[in-house]
Image 1 (cartoon, one colour):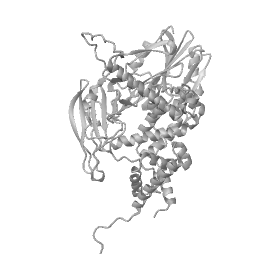
Image 2 (cartoon, rainbow over the protein chains, first blue to last red):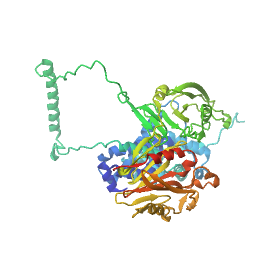
Image 3 (spheres, rainbow over the protein chains, first blue to last red):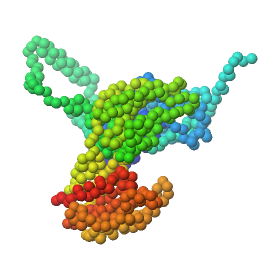
Amino acid sequence: MDRILVERAQRGDREAFAQLAIAASDRLYAVALRVLRDADAAGDALQTALVKIWHGLPALRDPDRFDGWSYQVVVRQCHSEIRARRRRPFELALHMEAAPVGDAQIGVALRDELERGFSRLNADQRAVLVLMYYRDLSVGEIADTLGVSIGTVKSRLHYARSAMRAAIEADARPVPQEGRPA
Amino acid sequence: MTSQTDIDRILGVWLSEGADHAPEDRLRAALSEVSSTSQKRIVRLPHLLGPSDRSLPPAALFAVIGVAILAIVGLGLGVKAGFIRLPMPTQLPAPASSPPATTNADRGLVDYRYPAAGFEISLPEEWNVTSTPDEAALTARSDATHIRLYVSSGDSAGRLVTCQRSAGPWESCEPRVATDRRSLGQAIAILPQDDHGVGPPTARLRQITLDGEPATMQSVVAYEYPAAGSQAVTWVVAMHSGRPYVVRLSWSVGREIPDVASIISGFRFLATGEPVTHRGPAGTYALSVPGDWVEPTSRKSGYQSFTVANGGRTRTVLKIRSSLPGGAIELCLTHCATFTDVESLDDLGRALHDPQLRQSFESPYGTITPRNGFILVRGETVLGGAPARFEGPASGGVSASGGFSDSAELYYHVWTTHEGVAVVLSFDSWAMNRGLVSDEQVDAILQSFRFTDG
């Protein structure tokens, strides 16, 4: 992140903002996609978040906080997307296409359980998991990025991991056989 | 029991799956919106109270609040008793006997004009359009209803793309060719599906009109059990001036898309026949091109281009390079180079054959090494009243003799110089061979070209 670019964009320089947006869009989209598990929704979240970042930039007091602050904006937008989609009575179950490399390491059934477990988490809990396991951030860095306390991150992480563990173990449970046991 | 290490590993692998690159259309749409909106300026008033007043003692704070409450209550009592008069709103003039005509803007509608695709559509303000007018298709979404809209037209050969993203395996977004209403109906037909024992959805057909043209409306009305029946899709297709058009609406909220009729009623075909005059950079020349050719905004000086619809996309069919303010001219084929001291037709001709313009480049198919031996026609002509030259692969027949007319660097060039200004018009040979640009159009453009005073 270039501090000078952020400062120029804060003063209304659209060219500087375009450079910032181009540089940030991949990482913001990747996080939104993993939080929302839906390419369309992630695209919507990215597009709206970028516009909100533009509008909100003048209020950002420390330009060095741009990276973390932009994550906050996109995670908040993910919240809105999840809320909007939950209001819909007939929501399509859209999942990301599995990458071939993952197939060898995670079974199809487990993947379904992971998706199901993840769908029960709220956007904050999903964001903590994504920042930890996808962006490889520490608890302290996540707290700094999302602008919350370390305790809050640990609490969200604990709940999210428990939910995902339950999902994984549900997949490992033997399938009950039909009929009564002898 | 799964160990923490296993969970960490599984989550790490699972979350690493998926795309890492943002879709360009979303980035472009966001930047387009940013380009037309201002930032909210933050007005900070840190010193109104003075630095020491920021932490008022509780007693002082209560005193301030108390005074404010007393003032409000006192004002209310004064108004009630009649000894304080509040200013009354100024009397407005009576409305004129004949109200002014209501415009789309008055009705909260925004017009989106897509000249290359030959249509315009009026949509309510809350619609978020994610494409730009120089594209061949409009894509939009309503923030209020979550309806998605895709509007596109085919090129003059009838190549048409009927959707941006298919709603299911029963819909294809591959380019189709539709030259009449029958083949247009086939382009949106629900495809057979025998996957997992579930058939394709059932669709209903209705005959309607689209801006006065007879049109077919097809709507998905039911999904075969146990398929998820949650995606409503409606297509409206029509032919106009020999080109196929499609309006596609999709909705994942319910089974029947609301307000289809009002959305469709905002659609209008554009007249494409009449040529439109464009001025060159710095106003040194002017020329007329067909009305459905679009001139994208150029950020380069000494450069102008025109695009046409090409099967759901756009293709640049004419590039014009002219002298830069200092007298030099930049020419580009596979690579660009700037040439100075270009004073004669010979100089320009030599520049067009400069090896700097034809260098090897990497493509998805490997390294491409352009060659410079495909000039089949060459001669002298007049452009804008000045002597000119032309050269290029002959239109027609060229693709049959080896397909090299599809090469990236093949153009039909026409160049001239006039009072120190050099101009090169480069028509895309690929587009000429496929009928996107006719010989008659090239002739008409060349005849319309004239130098102006700048």
